[in-house]
Image (cartoon, rainbow, N blue to C red; front, side, top):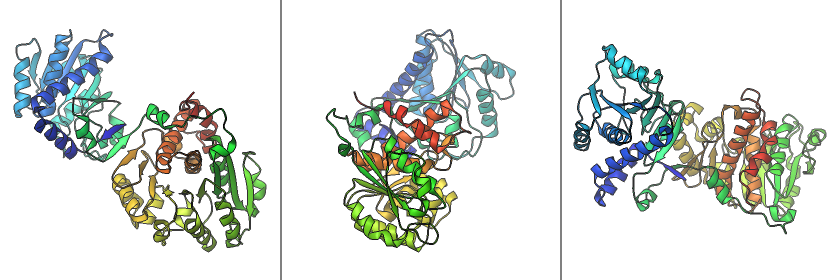
Length: 513
């Protein structure tokens, strides 16, 4: 797990470390040394040795001076370029003094001197240390021109902490920033490194540990990401003595005459992801379509209303099925009318097993939030930004402007675990800790993709994985399958069915022997 911390939290972490005996000067030495090590790991075995380190006047520049010293000591030809004169921070001033007689060349940048344009163009590696997490606002035009030259240079651009010109806590870019090939984020990730559009400028991301005690880092809640090994470690091992009952019974209540595909996709995803038995309850008017795919599923045709949606006449049957399942998914392609709301309400009020509430299941509850909040069982809701906006009474644009805040508000409003879908899906069960998913790509922005995600989540719950963890793992696996499908097909040609096709291959990366 990698933490994501705000600029304020980073300052607090450093202050706590300093109070605990790790001085600010030692932290800077550790940061610069760790970043230099990452750079050396990438370039020591290459012939690239001409390094330009572009420094500001703050602590980020101080990290750059340490990097300069460490690289110079290991055979790199290093030039430090001061963009705003000598530093003002005491720690950075000390680190600059340490390189003045070390063989590192020090230059002061002049915007109109072609000498520096050539220096930028001729460097194999450009290390960007102008601004760090303390930056906010807009860099002046002189620096904007410099950032453009660095971004367009022939060298490999490494930004320390953040690409200069980017704010740590916002994905919005107020002015051009450095476009990095790699960003080395010190201590933890920053929100702008994982959220778009700013994430487009960060390149490969490495996180550099600088000796902060784990108990300090654990004291901060906030965002985090996971990698494939994290997910694999949480996947239960299957016993050779298992039978289908050991992997649960998923009840999926979905589909309508208008949207039968949503039911097919969610049920097939649940089956492909390992649920022992998948039961699909759907309006009988859609029966012919339901035979088309996933022959493994058990069909439960229910009475239809005049719109071809599930009728309230089915409530007794659904209540009976709820007593014989491990988890229930409701909402995919149901449509939205009086009957829909009654059926969803009945499930929320009567289910004693975890509920995944998706799509029209969410829409039907927009004016009845207390029904979600008062449900007997654990509820996971999976809104896209438009559905989230309807629940919150705002616009999708407002949701997108602060996805963490929107997710927090949804948790508070509904009492549910929230999977706020979209680029960098956010998951939270308590409104304090937020998983930000980094798998997936724009190819997943296709009809039915959310139905697949809902099917994966309910399947994992059926396999005795904690519901909150299932929401996180399901989101990661869904995105990972989308990445595999993109490599095989394309982003433009992506369909929900192709994501499902790649699920078995995806799961092989997480299975334990």
